[in-house]
Length: 363
Image (cartoon, rainbow, N blue to C red; front, top):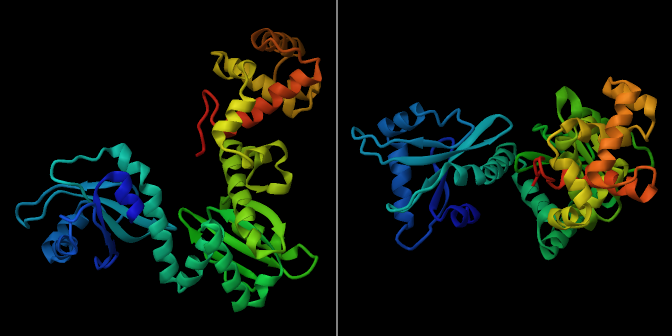
């Protein structure tokens, strides 16, 4: 709530699906709890509630601006749907100052926070709310909170003393099988998979279950110390980022198999971009002829195999040779030299992940 308030410069009120107030955060002392409660009273008034629902908030997936209604006396409001797994769990009302305005772009930027609230409310509804809070601290809390959460979990159940692997998935179901703990973390689900013996059957079963139906799964590294859960979780989320940019890597991506993409986990996107998007790489990304970029990527993916590259691109061998010459002229790199090939290959591979020119930055 406080993060939403700071981002928008406005007070916010979180209501449950029954329009009961769950929390509020005031931007200034002028917006008191009484002010927040007035929003609740207006919203729960039968006529006003019907008016607001008729504006489409119950089924909305994006921010909704509800107009003022003279008949009910309700003011214009901004409502962000609080959803998880395709279900609405509440409503986040934004209360800007009378002389303030909030753009659609600003509202879209805080939708992930509304999704996180939806995930927590979903966990409460499933009776998994306490576990969700502990895991949020374990996976994304500061070192002190993460360590305390690890101690709490180890003391509560022996399963947390075994080797484990974290999964990140867009699958919204909560798995109740022994050795598996699944909790919502914003728009995605974190899955703790305990591996009590050397067999990876439990992990394979969990991955198959969560990737069923077209869902994507990122598989982090396997560790034995619960304090490394946050590390495995970051790795699993990075796998999802890779799948989003390179669908061919999915629907399941394993941290241990990411290869050069693992470099994206050791520094910020800005630092990686500065390191790998050299003038030569940038020239190819920005060139108007996208065929050259696709050709270079395919050529590297096929290990420089001419026959495999021509088959993948459905072009004649001479066309491939021509494009490779154009790539060398454009980048001033000599693809017969290993160092030059490495510069271009790494730059193209990681460039997409960190938001190179002409690509979408996943962050």
